[in-house]
Length: 134
Image 1 (cartoon, rainbow, N blue to C red):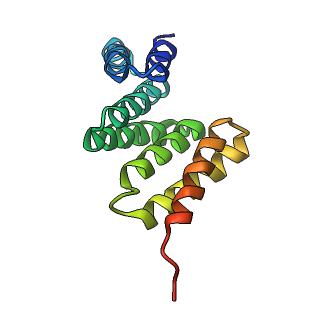
Image 2: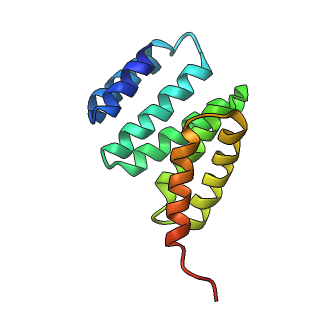
Image 3: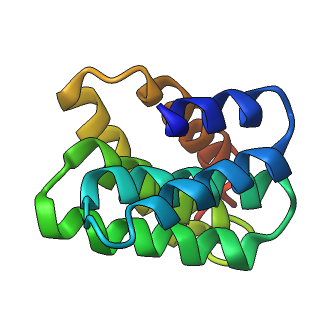
């Protein structure tokens, strides 16, 4: 429930409040060990950090989420993590970002998740900016 509250804060343009709630989720789970919820919280923290302009912190959270989902095989959160890392890399490593977006998009389409539309939009935009190969 807290993850949903944090998502709402983020959607309302309040990344600092969202990050606060996501940190509460992670702190509350510290002793209980729930990789599924923790990974969603780290992905949320990554989104909040991106919204606040902190690409370095965002990437750390997305990578932490990726490690957690690898333990449990949660494909949706895996795809969300890949998307987040791609968002962090697009300026410096556009080829790698596009590769990650393709992987994320493939998973999200297989799972029929609505996030696929945003990932597809980001991938299309990145491909449009790609310099022509001669």
